[in-house]
Length: 160
Image (cartoon, rainbow, N blue to C red; front, side, top):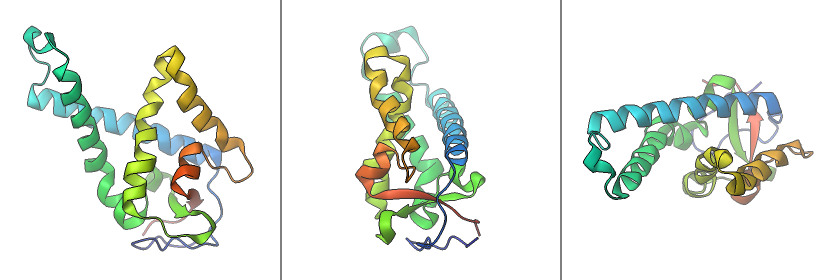
C-alpha cells in the first residue's frame, strides 16, 4: 500500500479499487452531501413558507446549496488528496488513467455532475444516464463513464 500525498501524486502502480469499495464510497457521499444540503436549506430558510413555492426559483436555490455542500465536503480533499470523504473513508482515491495528471477542474467540472445524476434514478426516462454510467464499472479497468470522460481511475491507497 502507498500513501496519498497532495496534488496528483497517487502512485501509478497503485492497484485498482474494488467495485465494492467504490460503491460504499459513493453511498457514503450520497448520504453526506444531501444531509449537509438539507441542513443548509433549513438554515437559510429557502423553502420555509408556502410563498416560497409560488415560482420555481427555490429549485435553483436548493441546487446551488447542493453544489455548495458538495464543494464544502469534498472540494478541498479533492484538490489535496484526490478523495471525497467517502473515498477517504474507504481508502481509495482518484488517479489519472495511465499515469496522466488530473486537474482539479476536471474533477469538479467533469466528474462531479455525475454525482448529481445519481438522483435521476428516480425519474424513469432519465434513469438511463446514471445507470449506464455506473454499469460501466463492470469493465476490465472498472472505469465508469465519468471516469472515462475525466481521464481518471479509482485506486486503492492508504490515506495519510
